[in-house]
Image (cartoon, rainbow, N blue to C red; front, top):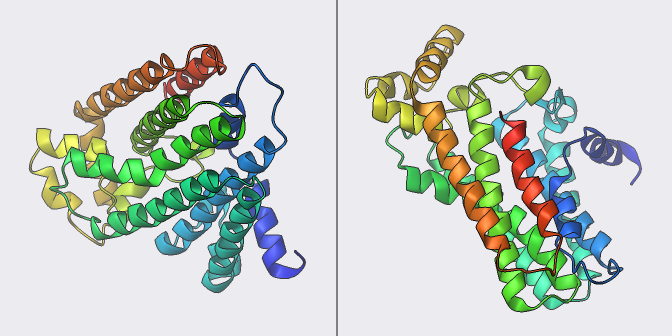
Length: 292
């Protein structure tokens, strides 16, 4: 696509990323057969959908940086960014339609709706310092787990695996995605900008209540008053971050994430030799290693 929107969409793609979701599509294809021709389309569809959500999230959050680079909204404005996100959504479904499997389209559509629901939950739950772990995990499943899960399910579907394997791989992906999100939220407390692509404490500034913050409030109830402040100066942000880091909350959140990693690996036991189980186990391990 030529012009500003094409340049903005290309910049989003060139910003990099782990490309973990399309990798999961390919690894969840039937290992006993050659890679099906539609596998790359399914992989492209999930990555395009992921990119679309990042662009739209940055519009809603007013984010200036993504992966260490200027966001579409900060460089081109909200109107262009919204249009780019819409274009990427359309491109994702153009790819999955070519898979010619109604089940694949239905699954990706359901996840796209869940992504929107999860974003609305995050907006409505902003600054809600009494948020429960269950509510947080529900949001994680919608915003992160669902796309990981459908990535795995699409690989299984396009390669002709039986339904029980499709379900098991979907559940593997969802558990992996929830763990990924928890680890990412822990990293927001103290991660280096060069590594995370954003300033530490972004969630604190935005009022996004994450699992380590929930656990920190349980340990130090007085922290709730400071977290509830809507317009925090940098001194208050730094004070909150110090308090959370010194608490047992990050370690407790990490244990919760490790529980989801174990859960993900357990789902692989139901797949037998149909997929690259060893590689999928390694993927789960790499998620842990990245945040260690």
